[in-house]
Image: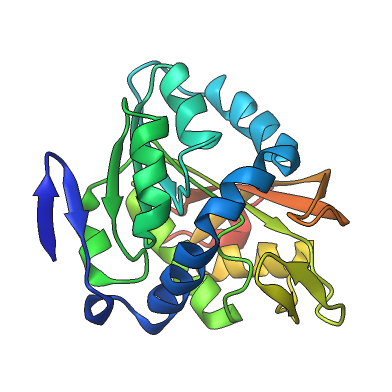
Length: 234
């Protein structure tokens, strides 16, 4: 891993997990197209971040995991007076993010790798539409990492499209078969990861190619040591 400027880190492909390498490969290829089409389909996450900002004091530390181009989430969090760090595996996405949101700190880090454990803890950890194509065990591992990064009193907010698992989806890089993720799946995965579920909010949305879909937003907190996740879930 190389430090390439103030607060900036760059990973080699060999330092990433297999899932991180694949995500970086795809994101680097579609970064320009993503920046063009994504803003028309981000209304649900914009509303969720507006809601989150009402719960956080100015100066709170926030992490956007899978920050992409920095818009809209890092820009919203900075405008709300938060101390914002964004991480992503795609250097192409991060180059755009640094230009779009110069107030934030951006790092090339694989969420699933050991390097991410050195980030410290945050008052809020958010991740929108970055976990949706992960196999269930890896999805749970990512949520567990969020729990550790949120610390005792932190909030975790994760957005994913609801997927029944039997319908192909058209993406920027072709049609593919996504893993299943229903609202029940999301709750169970969060509890397995050591998160107490406060709410799973369902909002109407669209995918990047315009297809209508339901967007699920998990609001959760790390479970205190020795407590049961289900006993703290809402």
